[in-house]
Image (tube, rainbow, N blue to C red; front, side):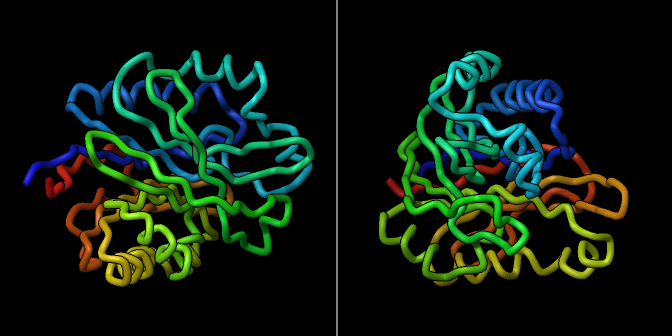
Length: 246
């Protein structure tokens, strides 16, 4: 039995403020690197903010094949953990709610959100379920609402992964945030029980007019139990040594 050190950020919301998001990303990555973390996750829509309105989405979306994206990668850490980062992506005329995987300023791959809320009509659903590996740990990605659907988690499990990385953004109306604050992990726990996989989630926290984000950023074991979690409503870095059977 060995371990792989993983981590997730419980981050402020950065709405259309890419420089501030990148500054937070670099600072958090440095903190994780100092603790010998190998995998670090950030929330859904982290880079540009979670923006479902199509006009605004088109203004901030980034093509992963563009010079702009290459310039963006140059502002990522030059060394440290492999990063899973939520962003808004475009390809031709299509828009995607995407999480990218980056290591030492190199683009490794992407996952596009499969299950979209009615409010996310601007986005095109993803179709692929890629897997990634770090330190012998095989992982896949789900984005927030994806975890409500057992077939997707089952598809992930069939690829013999060890871990689901959940990039989430639960900036909700106040009453909804309070109502669901203890339910997010319950739903994620069901997916862990069904698949026998570990899960780490990264979420936003903070307030804006009429809205509240509390988290949770947590690690769940294959039994669906929360084994580590940051305090609700606090910015922080969750670090966890994930058991890995050789």
